[in-house]
Length: 104
Image 1 (cartoon, rainbow, N blue to C red):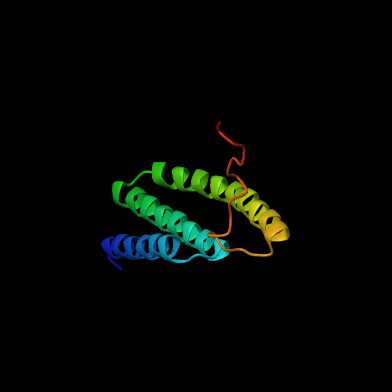
Image 2: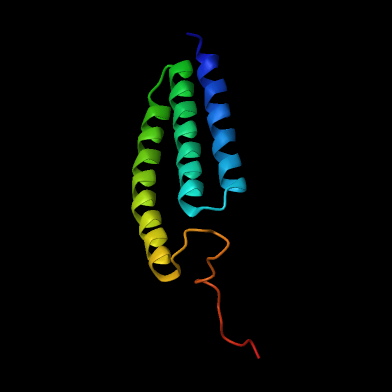
């Protein structure tokens, strides 16, 4: 298989993930879109490492996976906490981080 096909697949996955984040209003689905974008980036990094014949892209992809794992833990904890208080996982309903004090 040609390595350019992996880059095309990576572009398609990233586009689908970005569209998911921008269009869907459910926090879990948007979170899955972010994860899809990170996986598409990893695929591109590994493909570029294979094209260049070194391991730098694979090492960087490993660090992206570590950061993604930490992001999953924190992100899901925030989503669960918001769901417990609001009984909704909709992004539109979330205004918990908004400052409610009167600026005057």
